[in-house]
Length: 369
Image (cartoon, rainbow, N blue to C red; front, side):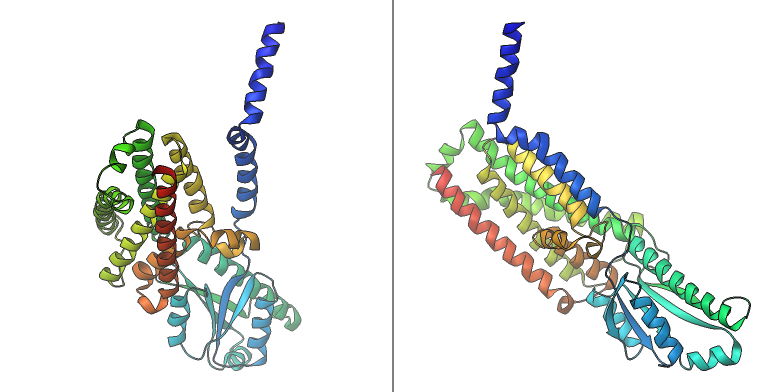
């Protein structure tokens, strides 16, 4: 028994000396609880909402104030005409628009009923459904109070809901762009991180280093096949999305492919960076899968809206490349927007690509030469 206890004590000491094992045992579960607890939420918080008030009467101002004061929405301002609705949705920060028709209050007084139009961005079906339900409930509550004061039966004010871009609220309008984003970053980062780490682990990297090739040429040579194969993969995914799910590409196909090539290059450069800090293939796989998959699914806006999360998660999400590519691919495929609406996200991805390539070349020289 004494020998057994001594052996167990030795194993404890090994575990406590290995910070990576401690991180897996305690760090990952704690991080998952915190992330899932705050990120996985079906509540609406800070959703952008705009108003098109063509009558500007007391009743419309009262309904507007009731919606804004509910605490669920952020006021994105007043629109001037119907053409501004599409522009507001294309910019991305506005999730819904509440429309009051001309002479809304006068019609309510004369006819006893009037309807409020609620137009939501259907490119995010789950979010748009929640937002319209919240707005409808607020309008119905206000209408019930009006009916109670006047003693009239029924609801004098009702909400009519309409969806932009995705009238049928098909779920694959949300999942297909998100899955494309997830697949590309996982496959590209995983493949490149493993292929270079394998060379180091098997001792064949030294053979490459004594060759006339420079470190930059070695990295580009490793990346190029995966870049071309990943691009073919994108073509296949888009074809399947079109033929199976009837998911349209409303914007420029050339722009979509160019943005996808930039995202692939960024993902490959991230994989190279992971390989330069990993000693074994197991480490590279662990960092690529665990370190990229969960944040991409939870914190990129793929499934759960970022504005619903605490502010700290918004800052964490800001350093995740998938957050920007999801915005880009949805804007081009579903909303049909041009480069002028996504240039900021494109610039961020381009900057990240240069950063990852620079760090990869620097670490490659330091650790392998």
